Length: 254
Figure (tube, rainbow, N blue to C red):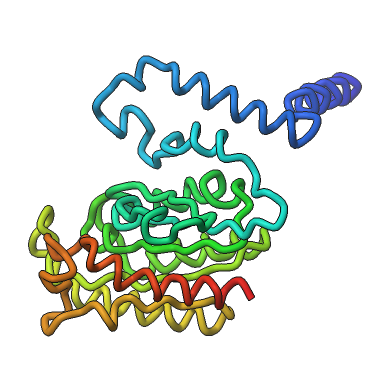
């Protein structure tokens, strides 16, 4: 019994020593980890997964460290998503706004959920604009049910709400087919997911940002004037999205 008690005290002491003394120490640990990763031989790889890992946890590590916390009075907004977000030149479309782009090409909601804390919560935004789901439907990381996608969205929303971040849930953009993965028949799946996103936003007092309705063509895809490949917006497409996003952000931040 005495031996067990001694071991328990030793274990507790060891655990205590492993916990950083304060938030600044924890931040320094994260920065050191980031620096070590940046210097890793794996970072010389042209393979993005080898360089950043399956969930791209280190994709924005250095940028996050350099960004720091918002200045006094700054209403930071994080745009969080996949390639549609990553390709959006925020300084051009939202000049002078403290908007941060944390999109990663090809990502699904399962991957995004894993990096949500470091790429959203730790940046202390006032609002997060989440645009995701089309790569799930395309099957980028394997088969997934609509229910599982919904649960990933719900988890991100719950984490944001628990940390005082206002949420904009964006509709999935229209897509009739995926040029990199033909035959997925996404139209009905996108409609079902968007219906759930709208209902979830309403029932949880979040803002639903409807890109889909104004951007769809007769086939419920993206028309050529808004997209070169039927999935990713071009400059005209982003011009359609910009005022809709601004309105949703203003609504969420009230």
